[in-house]
Image (cartoon, rainbow, N blue to C red; front, side):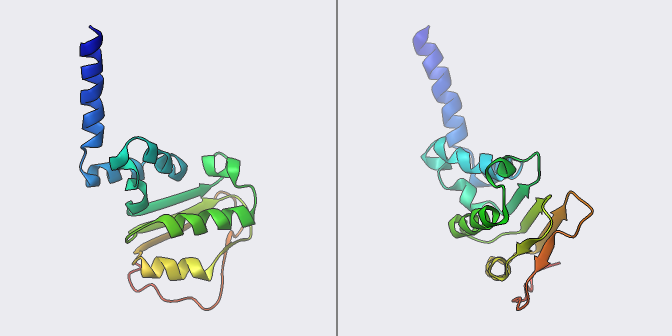
Length: 145
């Protein structure tokens, strides 16, 4: 009985490990970014999958996982910088949302998004206050819709 149980566990583990990359991406897009990164411990085949997903959603709102660890603008900036440095390939969509007024959307992020050929950029705020200050000197993103 124990051997059949371990065999079933092995089969289900193989199913997760052998999923095509596009299916893994579809799964990860629905997870908060922090959880998507955590999937890298599932197996070798999942280790870098999060770093190639085409949509990055960073939610710094009050009820988000990121907000628990990112309480101020400096930490938010470090988090997004690290996210961009680890992400490989192109991005279709980048979404940054939060509740803090005055978060600066840095020029280097626009440059990175331009290099990654982003076509959808969403800046969202949970409050009625203006959230993002986009710095001067922006490199154009020709792919933006």
